[in-house]
Structure formats: C-alpha cells, structure tokens
Amino acid sequence: MKKHLPYLFILTIFFSTSLFAQADQDLPVPEDQVINDDLIVASSLGVGFDVVDGEDFGFDTVRLKENNLRIHFDDSSGSGNFPNNDWRIAINDTANGGANYFAVQDATAGTTPFTVTAGAGNNALFINAYGNVGFGTATPVVELHLVDGDTPAFRLEQDASSGFTAQTWDIGGNEHYFFIRDATNGSKLPFKIKPGAPDNALFVAADGDIGLGTGSPTQKLDVDGSADVRDDLFVGNQISIGITIPNANASLDLTAIDKGLLLNRLTTVEKTTLGTSLGATEAGMMVYDTDELGLYIWNGTAWEEIAINSGSGSGSVPELLNYQAAIRDASGEFVADQSVNLRFSILDSNTGTTPYAETHIQTTTSNGVVSLTIGSGTPTAGLFTDVDWSHNNSLQVEADVTGGSTFVIIGTTQFVSVPYALRAKYAENITTSVAASAKSGESNKDLSNALNEIEVLKKEISVLKTQMRQVLKNK
Image (cartoon, rainbow, N blue to C red; front, side):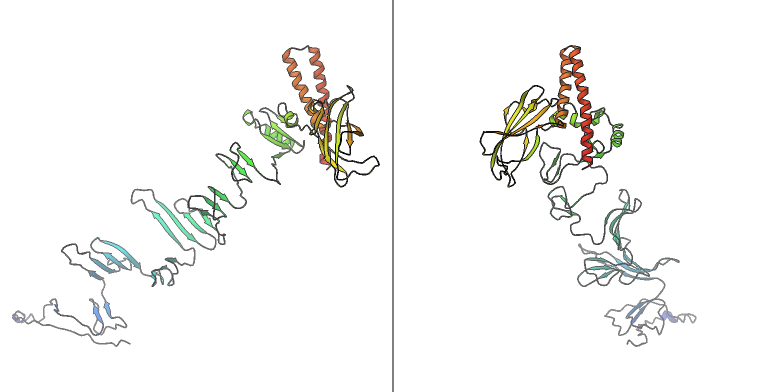
C-alpha cells in the first residue's frame, strides 16, 4: 500500500531589497521555479490549482486536479526535417454543459482524432498481444472482433462531404441472418444468409463463374440441384437440359433416356379462353387438350388439331401398323427360337387387287411369338402409302417357318376399324386433291363428288375420334 505522505516542498527564495522597500508590502511576489537538474519525486505528484495539502493519492503516482485539465506535448524541433507536430491530451470540455471525454488532439492541426466519452463500456476497444482488435471483448480471436448482445454490426457511411451522393450500408448479423442493409433506402435487406446454410451455397470462382451448391462452377451460373424461377426467365441464346453443350442449331436441346417433353395441358374451355388473347404473332403455339386428348396448334386465327392439320398432320402420321402373333407349325406346335419368314398382304375388296405386300424375317421368342410393324418390311408389291383406307381392306398373313420363301397362309383378317391416323391422312390428301382440282378448273360435278366424299370422311373421323378418346379414358 502507498502511504499518505506530506508534500515535498522545494523552495528557492531569492531575497531582494525591494521586498522591504515599503512597510505595507509584506507578501512575496510568486515567480516561476526553474530547476536546472533532474527532479525526482519519491512519492506521488499532484499538479493543479485544486491539489490540497494532505491530498489522498490512493494508488495514483501523478494526479492532475483542477477544472481544466490538459497535457500538452510541444515539439520544439525547428531545423532540418525533424518532426515537430504538437499533441495534447484533453479531459472534458471547458464550457458549462460540455461533454465528458478523454481525447487525443492534434494541437498543430486543430483536430481530435481519438475520443473516448464517459460511460463507454468495458473493453469498448481492446488490442491483445497478437494485435487483434476487440470491440466489446477482451478476448478477440480474429483481427477484428465485434461483440454485442443484440445484432453486432458495423456501418459504411458516405456523407457527401466529397461531393458524392450520401449512402449508408450496414453489415451485421444475429440469430436470424447475416445481412447487408441499405440504411439509406428504407433499411432494405438485399442480401441475407440464414444460419446453417451449407458449404458453397453461393460461390464465385476466379473466372467469375457463379456456383449455387457447388464450389467448382463450369458455367456463368452453375446450379447443383433443382432451381425454381418464380417469374419470367429470359435466355439470350440457347437452353439445354440433360446435356452440357447444346446442338448449335437448337434453341432448346433436350436429352434424356427416361423422360419426355410434357406440353401445357389445358381443358377445352381453357384452350378456348387462351385463344381469345392470341393473334398472328402467336402462330405455332402448341398445347395439349385434356378433354379432346389431342395436340392443338394455333394457326394465327384459330386452334387446329395437329393430327389433321393441313400441311403438318400428314407428315406426322406413322406409316406403320403394329403386329404381334404366335407362330405354330403344321402340327400346331409353337415355333420357338427360330427364324421365320412372314409375308403380309393388304387385299382391297373394292378393286380385287393387292395394293401392298411386304416380307419380314423374324426370330421367334421361346413362346413362338413375333412382334413387328407392318409397313417397315421389305416391299414386294406396291407402296404402303398408296393404300386407300376408305376401301374394304383385309390383311392376309403368310409364313414359312423354315425361313424360306414357300409361304403358307395362316390367316386373313378384315380391317373392321380403319387405322385412325391413316384414315385421317387419307382425308387430308383428299382435301389437298380437291384444292388442286379447283385450281386446275375441273368440272363442278367432279368437285361436288369429292366434297361429298370429304364430308363422309369427316363424319367417320369424328366417330373414330370419339371412340378413341373413350378407349383412352377407360384405360
């Protein structure tokens, strides 16, 4: 413990005869004290008008005590390039009602670069032995460590003093988010990270590629996982799904072995409503009608079903018929795991001709079954595309179970229901033929007969469409 010690008074008294010149001048005139050697104070030192005799210094070695406290550092260097800036430590304002603070002032420049106001909390500013700076903590673990009980943050404020528009940003964090706040514009939060976000939730590579969920993006935007676009999406060039590099000639390149393209599915009412807002600009738009069970395309003025749309439907009709049967030999046994030669002939009862025939060499299964498509074999008579499906046609099937060309008829079946797509294609061809006849100036009688035929075909097709939809709905 430091003891309470009396002041050490060092008095140097210079006597002058002028002191005693008049009897009524009995008090000494104060003069500056100049000590021309080291001054050593073995106890505490009190400086200021309000230091009293018997001052209790406690543990203070030096005490400044009065109503205006300042320590001034006046560098008297005046030669060469020696530094000579003056500094001052100031304690509190000198005016009534002023602030309470501890400040370091640049006395030469007249500025105050450092201030601590009264009431600042513990460890408001703390620098540890490693140079780490703590704000609100005495144990900073990184170079700059902020601690607060509610949303520690720091502010970046441009105050317009340099002629630029004022703008303030806050960067902070709490139990809800790490965030950047636009304090100037309604305290909006344009950027937030939720606690627990995974690694590489947002990653920017050295080449500027951005990864979402990946730390090794290979594109300008590389998303590892599903993505949800809740508004319009504009792509300036190409889109590829299932493939990294799309076909150079494709706007949309889809690649998959277990998926398809599912178009927008609308009811007839919804499709009709959509049509009221469409015009020539939307020509080519395609939807699937869930009531009609068919694809429709907007031709610029109305919806048309793709299957019978002139100029596009016929090109999409497959010239094939699926066929499957079990092959037996003359004794009735299944012909298993054996190469057989099959011949299919379409017989036209109206003309008594065979407009088309083809052969297939197939290997049967262990149960003697063959599966193929009529129209894809080796033609032996006519063209499959020339078959008139409006006639009464039958399918004759012949086989040579040894794989040779000695055919035996194994069955003849009449086409009770005309293949729907082929019948529709035939109707379209008739329509095109009528248009051509009109242009060439054929007789009105010929045109009338053709148009009547078209009307019959349209009715047949309508019935077929209804039957097909009912079958599909009942599946």
